[in-house]
Image 1 (cartoon, rainbow, N blue to C red):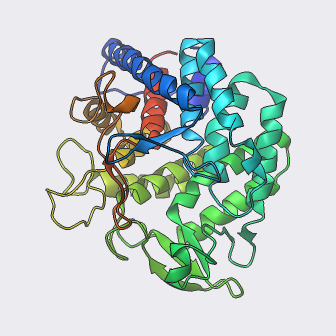
Image 2 (image 1 turned 90 degrees about the horizontal axis):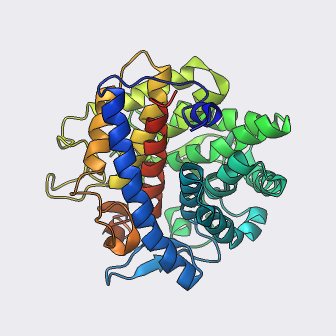
Length: 398
């Protein structure tokens, strides 16, 4: 692993995790990455046969492919392939990443969805970082410009969902902003860095500041949805869409916030973002009803605990964020990082090679209120777990 790669993956500086010694950590990562490549090869062969991008597994144990019109998860499998190419130097992963992401390149022009950051940062963003291919950079710029059209300067946020159709139209929202949207900001920060144009960073900072002001409760948990008046900028309501209740803490939403504010600190070095990331981490890691293995229930306030569903995707996002946060914070998260990685790599959550239709992790939840993707593998759970392993690897490869 090159020093440049380590610095990038760990957020510009090399951090230290002290609860495992370097040799033990190295052995763990090597073992898991061997398993990852074997299992992802199973999924890649199926994807190449179908000429589609895998998203999850249906109740009938068939692979569900991403929606070709647009799917917020479509960038994760190409992103996984980029990580594996970077790790192994095997050209098949580069070819797979390029082939898969080309299927949705046209979506760079869409102005009807906020998830362009997820889609194009994880795929073309990783591709550009690794290869410096100028065509990838141009795709990112076009996608970023499309995303900026959803910014309302009166509110100071990027609109998440359109409200003129679908289930969102039934909620009475005017300008909904979801905590997930914090994850779309990394594309904008990157674009200002690689183009020198600060318009992207200014929007990202505005969105982060407005979200910081309105999305968080006294205990540092987050609402899922804050709806604004598009003309006055005033808050109309605070609700949920994928959580148990408006006042509950949807698990993956807490992870999105943790990751998002950690990234904001990486790019700005503004202490209020570091402070917020630490506060969210404290909420997540100290929640008393979380099982001992650290894998949260799908909502921290879900009923029927301990018999309700876990959300492995929330844990994968959380541990990836914690590894980076650990380099910035005065708090040592090493024990929590080790515990989460070991839990995710255990037989309870990690599929054996050839099973689970080629997906790595079991037991994630997409949206229980919508009865969608319950207790299944998800491509983004795999993506963030692999990202976490590579970041973790960087902590001893200096």
